Image 1: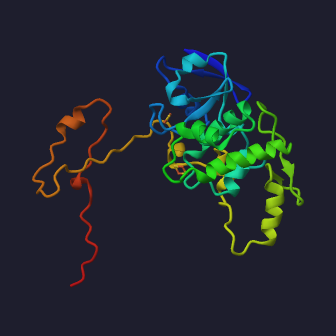
Image 2 (image 1 turned 45 degrees about the vertical axis):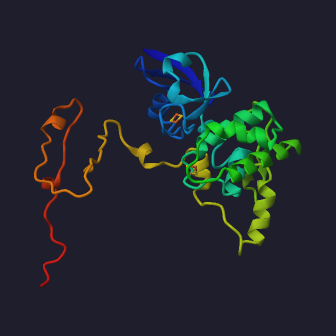
Image 3 (image 1 turned 30 degrees about the vertical axis):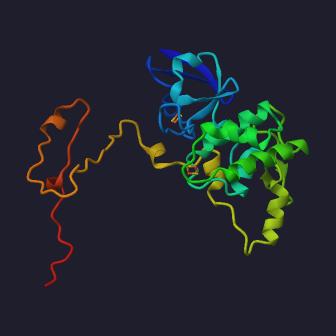
Length: 266
Ligand code: FES
Ligand code: FES
């Protein structure tokens, strides 16, 4: 079936299978900033805005978005014009591997669009649907609070708006809320301070590529089968049943690994 909707303000027309979910449609359409995690609506890494509301795109059928509006992390801001949330997450080192952060920033944007001045408790409750395995959420909550406070000072975008107008740093670089002043100060006091990740804005804006984002269409997926026995002698591996399964292209065992000795010395 053909489904038409807008992504980050631009029309998209895609051919989708009846059971296809929005996550897969977006990723194969090039929006790889939308990450795949649990695929069951629990981790939040695939969060997008659907008509302005945060939803796990792994749990939305593509057919259900006909005529609707989708915002992905790519539509929140880019490295040249980051959203204040992206700048604050970067400057506060809120991200480590950053795999969860695209979804967390999209969720945070939805919160600030709806509640411009949330309490810390409201921020924490809102982000409970975005799981992070690397961090303790403290920096992320601080970043959202900082943007909310920046909004009060009139430096952040209006609720419901797109990425917003970045402020301009003294050297002409564009930064988000509070970023320009801190960047100028950081340049004068770099020693003994933590530095933002070099690739940080690429990660936080969904532009950086993870391995799974680079897999060309039709790439085979490999699974490692380990012995269920802690101590055992493997006498034979019978792969005939596995090879008979639909979709299985090959089963590789020790027989497929050349016996190359590390050394022939002594
Ligand atoms: S991948 Fe969608 S919620 Fe985890
Ligand atoms: S920063 Fe790695 S999972 Fe959140």
